Every structure is written in structure tokens, then in C-alpha cells.
Image (cartoon, rainbow, N blue to C red):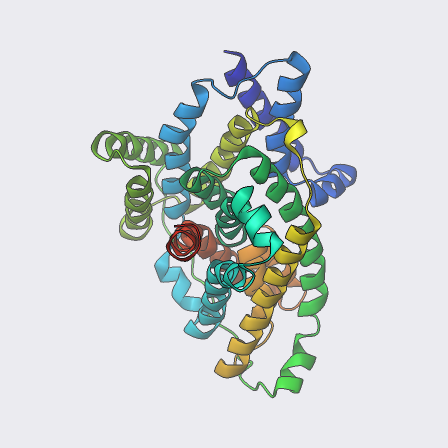
Length: 375
């Protein structure tokens, strides 16, 4: 029972602390987000107890039930009807950024194929397996990151390294996007972009929503049924994603807010269980790998800026789309508010779209790596 108690304790502590309105705690969570804290606390407790829970049955429960439940919950929080209000051009900028995140590391790795970075670090030490979880993190957030870690069998030492580096980069990137979006009008003038109209307002679904407990039971029943009928993990991911979209778009009173909150709690639980495998002596730092990530992230912004110019769409959508990808559902609207508060709900929708598509972009990255680089 110890691993279960540690995981539940971690979720309760992190969830409670993350919601306390305390400026000191808020500053801590700015740099050590809840998802990373949920990963580290179980590792610290395991180390203190002198126990190794890496082989405990809790991990099979997580892969069979908690991860699938998180997938279907997150996917069922996306309303395609509401998404139309954003307009196709900002969504095209967003998709261009997502596509670049997915394919750029494969292209850059291929160009550097004969170098030490690829031959030694990526291939011999299997750091390439850390790139799909980064794709998942930057596009889909923690749910996609965890799913892709399982799909690519990312080693624990590599996963810990990318978690730390990813956290550092995302915090710095958020600060840059906060400042960058304020320069959007000047950038529009420089690039001679004239289409600066407001997107349509987003209409929320009216009427009484289905109670959260019923949504939970429907999602749980779906996961149990899919587990019985579909043995392959990859196929489960696809089936549950499609079913989640069906729930959110075809059930009139579906409770989008509840399932999104359920998904966030499940992510904390999954990360806490994963933290039971962590051993701190596995931590490594490679400067060349950090530079690889920086080039990757900056080029993602540049390509979206090019697409914004080609489509003649307000460059403010570039940092918004970038934060919807890289930052997520909390930081995307916050950055948006620095330019136009009325666009905050649109930024949230883009972040939910990111959460819904990240796993599939990461699967594309895995396919490309296995097809062209690692066999």
C-alpha cells in the first residue's frame, strides 16, 4: 500500500498548494510547476524510505487505467463548435507551429547525423527517445508527454533530463512571450500586416450540464471497455481520443469544465506514480542537448511568424499560438491578456486543441525517427 499512499499524498499536497493564494508559493510554482513537483516528491519519499518501487504493480494500473482515463478526459474537453470562432488563419498559424515542433528535430538530427551529438548522445545513449516526449510536452502538455514516454520507451535518466531542461526553457520562453506580444503592433507595421480584425466571440454551451459523477462513470466505463477489446496501447490511444471527441461534440450537455479538471488531476496522479521510478543519481546535463532544444524552440517561433506574414494575420497570434503549444492552458490566456484580454477565451481553446493533438504529433515524430534514423 505504500506506493499508493505516496502517490495519493503527493496529488493532494500538490493540488492544494497549487491553489493557495500565496505570493511566495506562486513564485515557487512559476519555476517549479505542479507537474514537476508531483514527479519529485515521490522520488524524495522513496529515497528517504530507502525503497525501490520501480517494479510495483501500481505502474501497470497507471498504464492500463489512469493514462487512458486522462486521454479520454482531455479529449472530451474540446468543443469543435467553439473552435470555429477563432478563425482558420490563427489556427493555421498554430498548426504550423505544432507541425514544426514535430518534424524539426528529425530534420536537424538527420543534418547532424555524423556528429558526436547524434552518434554518441542521441543514438548510443538513446537521447532521441526523449525528443517525442518533448514534442508531447510542447504541443499536448503533460498528458501527451506521458503517453509518448510509454510509446517510445524513454529511459528514466533521459526523461528526468528533459523534464528539468524543458521546465527551464518554458519558464524563460513564457517571459519572452509576455514581452514579445506587447510588440505585436510594431511587428505588424514592420511586416506590413493589415488584417487586424477581432475574432468572433466564443459562445459557451448553455443549459444544465451533466453532473460530474456521471461524466466520470461514462469515461471510466469507456476505458474498461476499450481495455477489454483493444490490447495494443497505441490503438487504445487513438480509439479513446476519437471517443472523447464524440462525447464532447455529440452529447449536448457534456460537462466540459469537469472533464478538463479531471484530466488535470489525473495527470498529477500519473506523474506521481512515475516519480516512484525516479532515482536522483540518474540526473545528467548535456550542454549540446540544451542548445539543440533552444534552436528547436526559436525556429518554432520563426516559422509561425513566416506563416503569419504569408496569411496576413495579426502577429499577436504567434506568441499566443506558441504559448498554447509550449505553455498550456494556464499561461496562454495570461500572455494573451497582455495584448487583448478579449482574446483570452480563444487562447484557452487553442491550448485545449494543443492538448488534444499533442500525442498524434509525437507519434509522427516517433514514426519519422524510426523510419529515417534508428531503423
